[in-house]
Length: 436
Ligand SMILES: *Cc1c(COP(=O)(O)O)cnc(C)c1O
Image (cartoon, rainbow, N blue to C red; front, side, top):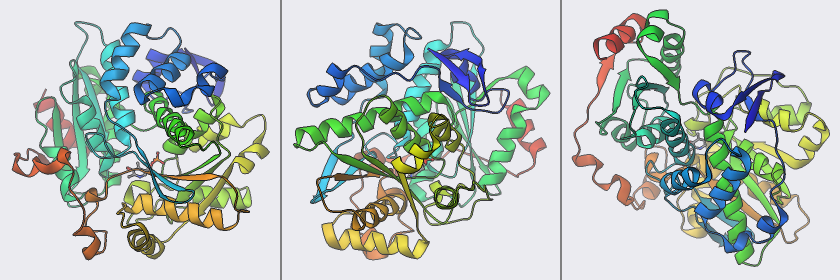
């Protein structure tokens, strides 16, 4: 597998290099040189495959000889070890539940696959791989649990004090082993600034082999295509074949993976990008002007992104035909009031509880369907996290009804371990050097 930088098609690297470096020097993003359609036979028979089987076929197709087949197979079975069921809520409305992994969020797909790919490429005797990650909640949990116990790696998570939910904080701080948590007296942006500065610090780079685990890593994008194919397989089994996906979007990695799946031959008729007040992309699709902005805070905080990184990848996939992009994707944005109202409507209509991000995707699907001549299109909205991760945001009487999943039941009894730091870089640097 070869990848190029979206800023320079001649800048090409191997899969291994793209995984360890995340971002090319020219600040573009890595994309596969070849995005060929999967073979017809496989696509026509999707209904007969399980999620790991689908994941293996898609990964093999994209990765080529970057990882030998037997090793890739073992890696997939290890990484994709939980289900992504499609649940019908009413006629033409399905929810794709992506929260059955260890951290109860769809980011488990990306983080588990990426951690195992990194571990696979690490050679014996190589320097410990130090993963630094700043999180507003979900990313840190997925990365921590993704790398937990993976040999040759260590994870340092920075999270903003008092700004992550109870369950998220437990997921970040109770791991032990090769995962450590740093509570920063500041905002998520402060956490991110510390990580960014660490990456350009001469002394730290001499001492450590630093890598980031952020959502622009190609090894996080690829596994997110798997569940789109698997959702389609489930629809086929239910006798459906026409599908629109509504995706709650922040950094646009999730929907970017869906569009990559479409490029690989998955017959999706339409995508809906659903955002909160951070509506840079909806505005672009309306006006044709892409105007990045500082993010604004909302109750769906994992989507508080004013300049979504992965949008570059999506545009790159349409570089020969930009008009087709506007045809394939619709976009809607919602306020916090509308998000809360959607949570309530979903609960009232189906007795089903969603997280605020998921609620936005449902509302966007409903609004899109309003404007469509009925028809036979199955609407699928993606549920990106379990609602128990955001209890404070939900109306109390709904939060009280949440069934807590097994994965988090015993977190309460575990010991929290964290180091509290200020937001100054020198303090963080000293912490890293003192705790080699
Ligand atoms: C990260 C996240 C999103 C946004 O996904 P992107 O790939 O950044 O668009 C949506 N919902 C939840 C719960 C998340 O954690």
